[in-house]
Structure formats: structure tokens, C-alpha cells
Image (cartoon, rainbow, N blue to C red; front, side, top):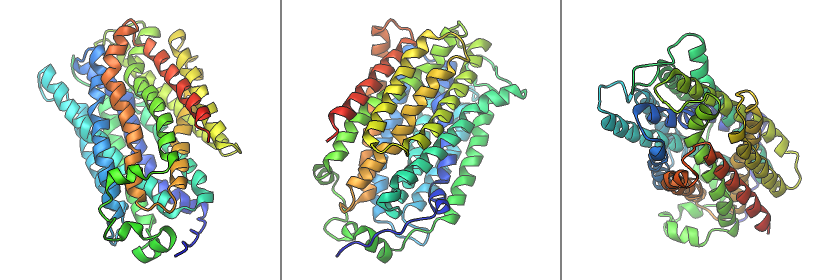
Length: 435
């Protein structure tokens, strides 16, 4: 049976599909900007920081295909993707209230680090569980002509949420909430950032839940086919799905590898880098280190603003793959500049460039892959498996982070150069894999 063409959605229809992404990204921004700072404050050695990032993507690569496959087979009066979105957000809210208090329960340094690690694992898993359905909703309900626009709206909301999450600790410290605490305890400015972020997250998800009405099974099948619901394919054998995946799935996956290695090192080592190169300290117990940690949030916000602007520019390129490669080159140049800049305001320039790469990473891969997957069925399962191209690079980068840090002289700032080289390789892969 020939599939019906999906109807074009008005702007606000596309907006509502993705609005909850704003709240989810606030949570993700708080995590990415503050986790290394939190674990360093709890007592972790810089050479061990990357190891704390292994479990989150590991859980993601296990959970995302499960969420995708189960949601392919879920039909409720609330929808097929939205129930997973809501449950993921609810768990994220709970963990966001616990994680920043890891040092406040009177635990030993080792116990506090373990508590924080477990909390981080659940936070990243729940955030990904809440994030993935938004990508699936676009794959389910948006036609090919509007895919890039839909994912660009997601990119905008993602970066807008990032700006809010990134600046929270700086703003709270500015208005008088304490930015220092006893040794091994997280400052109140960070704790309250997580509390407020959790509240916004659940409100945004409730909005999307009320505004978005997913198609019932019969109507869904008219637009997407019914392969997913036949008895012989309902279990969605992941090995077979990967074996039959379109070549674009794998080609984009190679590019993704180098992109996510770069950003893993940014999240892990930027706090230590800025504290060292701008504030001149590596002592996590000092106010200078916590001030540097707040400024990292501002720099990440600048990156997010750059992403918002660049996401609008990306839609003007006729050649999407050229735009993808150019964005990664700009981001790589930004990373390479960071270690050589010692003024906190001049650092805005490289982080704007890094934002160009981030915008492309959010919009391009899923647009390319979901277009390639039309007619394959199992959209949710495929996108869950595609999440492996995000998780696997992070796992490998985190596992090797301490070793690479030692090889480059144990200066956290040098890891920014490693990140830059990784993005340059990713850009080269776009050129090599153009066909």
C-alpha cells in the first residue's frame, strides 16, 4: 500500500512537538556544565574525572533502544512516545534534587563520590529517556520537506534551554546565594540551580503532553506504514535492524563519533581549564575555582547562543553536507583557541565558534538519518540504536580521558586541543563520506 504524504504542520504545530525539549535541555545543561565541578569539589582527582562520565552514556546505549522499541509497540490514550517522555522527566526531577546534595549527607569522600556517580547515572538515563521521544515524534509526524525545519526548532529550543541552565549558578551567585561551601560540599548556588531547573522541566513536559496529540494506530499506519506492528517484526530484532540499516545510518555514525568525543572532553575539562588559564588556580577548595565554575556556565551559554544563531543560518545552505562540515571546522577552530586565551571575555569568541558545531550536531544527523529511514519501519527502534553513535564515543572518550590527559602533560587545557583535532577529523569524514 502506498503511504499517504504526511500533512504539513503550521509553525506552532512544529513548535509544540518540541517545546518540552526546552525543559529537558535545562536539565542537560546543568549536568554538562556542573558535573565535573561537582565531582572535583567532592574530591575527585583531575585524572579520574572522565571516568565518572562512563556510566551515563553506557546506560543511555542500553536504555535508548529499549525505549525506542517499546514505544514503537505502545499505543495508549496518551500516545505512544509521550508516556516515556513523561516518566523520564519525572525521574529526572527526583534525581536533580538529590545529585547536588551528594556532599551534604555527611558521607565520606569515597561514599559521596559513589552516591554522586549513581545519581549521575540515573540523571543521564532519565534525561535521555525524556529527550529521545521528541526526536521520535518528529520522525513520526513530520514530512520530509519539514524535517530540517522541525529539527532546527528543536535545536533552537535546545539551545535556549541550555542558556537558561548554564547561567543559573552565575545568576544565583550574583543575587547573593552562596557560591562557597565547606570542603566537599556543593555551593548553594549550584544546588538551587538544579532545584529550579527540575521545576521548569516538569512544567514544560506537561505543556507538550497537553498540546500534542499523537496519531492513533490506523492513521499512523497510513503515513508511516505498518511494518512495526506485524507479528513477525514486532519484537524488532536489533541485530537484524542494524544489518539492514541504510548506509547513511553508518556514515553519519562515523562523523558522530568524532563530534561526541570532542564535546565529552569539553564537558569534562573546561572547568579545570578556565580555572587554570584565567583564574590561575587548580585548587578546588578556593573561591576562585568556584567563580571559574560559574564562568564556565556563562561560556557554555555563549556557545548555546552561537548555536541558536547558527541554526538559523544552517537552513539557508542549499548543500546540507557542506554546512555540516563547515560547522565542525568552525567548532574545531574554537576548541583550538581556548588554551591560548587568558581573558574571560575574549573566550566568548571560541565558544561562539564551538556553538556552530553544536548546532549542526543537533540538527543534521537526525534529519539525514530519519529521511534515510522512510519506509524501513521501526523508526523508534532505529533512533534508539542511532543513539549509540552518541553514547559509544562518550564511553570511549571517558575511558581514555585520564590516559590522554597524562600523555598531553596533565594540563586540562591541552584537552581542548584534543577536542579540536577530533572535530577536524569529523569534518573530514563529512567530505569523504559525501556519497
